[in-house]
Image 1 (cartoon, rainbow, N blue to C red):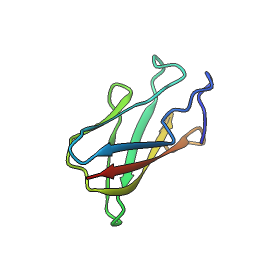
Image 2 (image 1 turned 120 degrees about the vertical axis):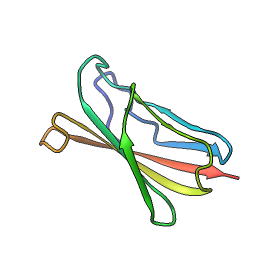
Image 3 (image 1 turned 180 degrees about the vertical axis):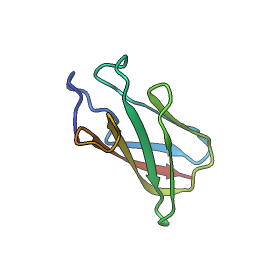
Length: 96
């Protein structure tokens, strides 16, 4: 997992929530004033996927995510798919 310039990871390595909780993952950007394109993809345990853009330096999803072990991939860069992009990962566990 990559760390920001301040030594803190952009996202936690793992997060656990209950099915009835909304998901909130703050992103720890080294310089939050610097404009970067940041998108996320959530790969569910059943193989389905969801994706979106990061807004206000956080990932917010409503409650009701399926129970299981899922994987977030966060892509940050300028422009997004240039040589300067970086990948970050977070294992998400949703419990009943």
